[in-house]
Image (cartoon, rainbow, N blue to C red; front, side, top):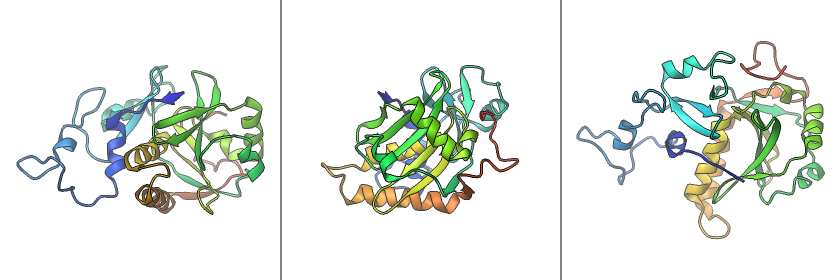
Length: 239
């Protein structure tokens, strides 16, 4: 099952490493990026800037762009009811994460990257992986996730719908992260944008490497087996 991702929700991630406007990007009379100029909050229509926050629409599983006031409305637990949840902004690189090669192979996914999140509507954990066609959901047995949580107590603080466990096993990497869910969809969008041919081509692999390098620079380090740090449990996390 493919998860839908809005173009607006991905745009800032696909351009965040660019310091200049591409020559083929439309510009207005002032030289500003015309696409960015019309990007608006999906709730109130107010223009938003790069770095704006996102909400998860629980009914459609889509990301919605949000201005600061609208995003703030949904920061409180329960404020969004069953409609919206605000995406948090914490990024942890997990040290000592327990997921060996045999457990990974048992997931039976065709790529070396995946992300896991709690779906509050389905009341279960879900596993998705990026592909040239979008995010693809793969079956995840409840007992498999339960074992992963038991081995890595930090996962008990994963906020439903809006945070994910992101796994990178490309090349020699064996990295595990807790990230905002929109980071995972940004990775999906990056692969969709740059993938060429059967193997992806050198451009997409450079972009993937840059994505994870940037993620590492902005992430704190957390012990995966030590549980969540006091004061760092996100709003909406399961007790």
